Length: 292
Image (cartoon, rainbow, N blue to C red; front, side):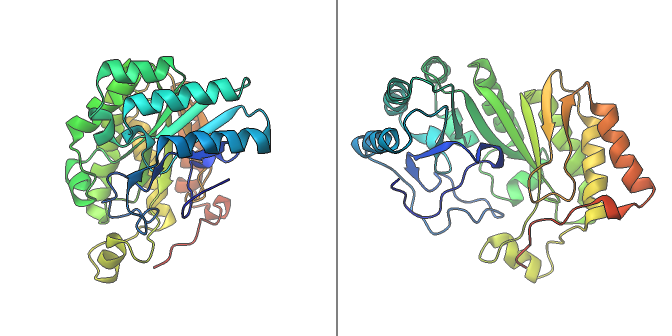
């Protein structure tokens, strides 16, 4: 398949056919993100994208799942996305899932009617990087939206019946005394949005990012695993979700937890308590390497 630069998709979408609709990310300002720093954002020409679908059909035959890349394919004009979705489902009779990353800003630039049209034409899931519910942290990491705007974006996707996968990043506060606020406020924003799935990641500081420079200067402190676990427990305690999948299986995390909320909340908290209260660090796994 034809791709420009490095290609990223969610950890759980590793087996999907990835279709590159945009190059880079429309926002590309987040201080922690390293994925698209070497790309200039642009929307690919529609004929190129449709040709790629033809190539994928010839190479793979029928596919069941497709992920639209790069970092924010929902930033494309709605009419182009509708054309792509229709062409995908016509090309792959067995297709049952089309997902995409979605920045809050790009979601807010779509009307509720446009989002509903995308869902009705087969946009199954959107991955929204909420990262934190703390207003100061959202500003510090240059997320580009406020707490209220993030909630609005999440609710717009939910109202359009697009399955919403929200991610939050543990350790993003950068200072021990801000960890509690980060955890509590992130639980609160998730409660307001009520996502269908919540995935936790842990901050990885990559060379070349603005946050890397903050670490080098001593302005950002990367927490150790016990601190991350304490933050995870506090966040989980504050969650009041009606029916939401929960996972921390991402390689950045020191522990893999999975379940459904609220059904498995007590079990998940007990697992964390067994490790934290007994200081049983042997049950933790090696995380992806931080480049600091």
